[in-house]
Length: 248
Image (cartoon, rainbow, N blue to C red; front, side, top):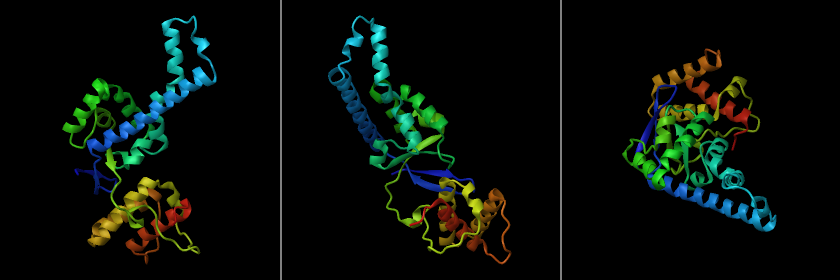
């Protein structure tokens, strides 16, 4: 499985497995089946349960088409809305454990999802051939919408435990030191913890110091001179979990 190196704000590369073309196609098929099921149900309700078919009587073709578009509108905005609400996933992507992320290391924004949604019109031309060709020939299995929005789809199937997430074990009587951590996002904390743990494994003091200074600069913190950089970062991670309720 190919990997993508995402450069974080600490100027450190983190490698993620790129979702394969097959995984993305299966996720698309699952989402397609959900949309088809919705259309079947909504048409059954419209014509059989509510018996509203008479509304179409006497209307011209364009008016009828407008009504059909109105009642099936959720199908068209399905990927845009769900990726925005589910942080880069749809039910299909969640089932396949893949997610849309920004290549620059930050969480994709609504604008990014919008760009992907608009380009979906091109990517799905000729039964999706254009999108498939784009994914096959691009470096990171990106369709045109990904390339335009600066995103990629990564796999989340690696076996993980608490050390691979933003979660951190904290005691019930834990007393936080830096309430300023609430200014950080989950993505910021994931990057901090991942880089910190990698630096610890290889005893890279330069990265630890650089990461510590970056955190202090962003949060405008001053620490006790007796506190080591490692102690500081460890407290930051625990404080974030304390204030956001992300404890195990």
